[in-house]
Length: 638
Ligand code: ATP
Image 1 (cartoon, rainbow, N blue to C red):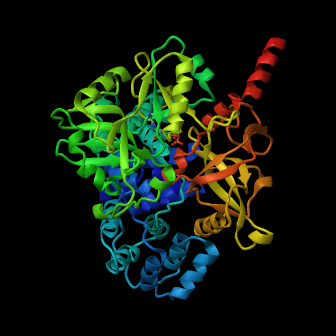
Image 2 (spheres, rainbow, N blue to C red; image 1 turned 180 degrees about the horizontal axis):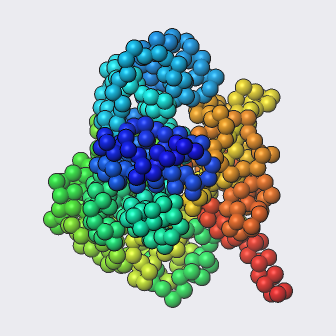
Image 3 (cartoon, rainbow, N blue to C red; image 1 turned 45 degrees about the vertical axis):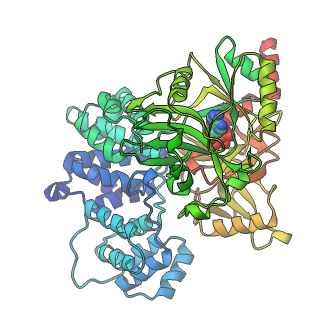
């Protein structure tokens, strides 16, 4: 493939002469990635490109990285492109002289305005050639577009679009729509960056770039781990990339510390099915049980400038959603505190009855442009951890110590700020009783946590040191699953004209692929189905993505862009000859599927990459009593 030559850092003479990264180099990289099947190959191609950028124009690495995941700034800043398709169509018409109706009908036919834009450019004759685009200029223009509104967007889009060559038009338009469709998510991107760093270090001793990855496998693994770990505490490429270019990788974590104002990936819990499992796991260790509040996770930051930010479980910036909390945050401080990071759950609160209200009430609260005087749903914050105080991280201290510091510096404010109700006990009868009390207190159950040993705050980990014990745990499964909708089946009878069933998948974080787990057609009201059909009809794909793993017998009528997560309950999990969830973990050839899946709700707070992971599915399958008992009896027969 001659275009692959472009990714070799040494031979690209044109790029070198210019000293800036041509936008075409990035667009071609995306194009090859889109045509490639297989995650490793995709990562390899991206890493060659990043390596080229590091060697030829390192100051372009930040925009190249952001553009590869279709962001303009750290995710938590929430700067989104998402320009309306009609605005883009108008700019395309202006630049190509085509009429709107034609562009619209082509887009409906092909299902991708990016391709339509590219085709319109290719067949267009030009009077004179505009100057070639470079990554830096395109990135700056995209930022400008994101920050303005109305008609001026069309002019800015036009300025770049007229200069687009070949596939540049496709990816420029897709960036603007907000769907790049190359399947590079954060984990692949970080891996590609790590490989690129190692390639850059060793390219001269290896001569051939493809040999580096083979010879320096261990170094790549170590670099990837450091980069991923650092990103969990400092999810900001504007900080990380200059640091990797300047310092040794071993120094990275220290050079990019956690800091108030930047969300940390939260520590997560493992499900359990009952008190007996808690006893088994924590025997002989000091533990604490906390009520498990059913609201919205909130990481609350105060920085040295006195600014407060609130981040969701997904590291989204929820600050504008809670102006009331910010306005009344001062009284929680008992001492003079200059900076902090608290971990907490926000719940809806009934002021008159002084009690917690169900999650459904919280979810009616407006998300954006909240005016403090219009707030109808009052909230109370339940604080359960302190991760940082006065310039110092506490994450390596045990929970007992973090709690002590929390109580020293913070205090409760009636109906507004509370500490999570907790009980330190190793007596399982007391745990059971505390579980029942939590349910009477309108909670979901308990979180059981280690206090002293193995009790650090594990950033981004689903840890065995936090166990969740839910009230409505189904005796078999223990927890609901959060799954990604990847396909739809057209309905029949009463459901004609809408989707009547959907294909769901879990996410395999190791391979960054969506693996099917079940078809679902139960748990929906007619209104749910109508809304889902409307939503997914604008997120259709012309074919399955290379990172969908499914059996051809499950082929849906329409494939969807993975963009929505649903919470689903089921009767149990079983091995399946057709589904692919967790394939290779429990069984070499069979995946795992859900029996009697039932739709519960949309999980807006989770992105598809935060869906239930393949390893979690395998763990849930293996923890079922039937499976465990079978295992025991087959072991005893051995
Ligand atoms: P997960 O976050 O584990 O993928 P999830 O979002 O569905 O799954 P749960 O499984 O219900 O959440 O449990 C973990 C969540 O419980 C935390 O993310 C937090 O929002 C909430 N929570 C409520 N009370 C506590 C507490 N005392 N300690 C820790 N988390 C709590």
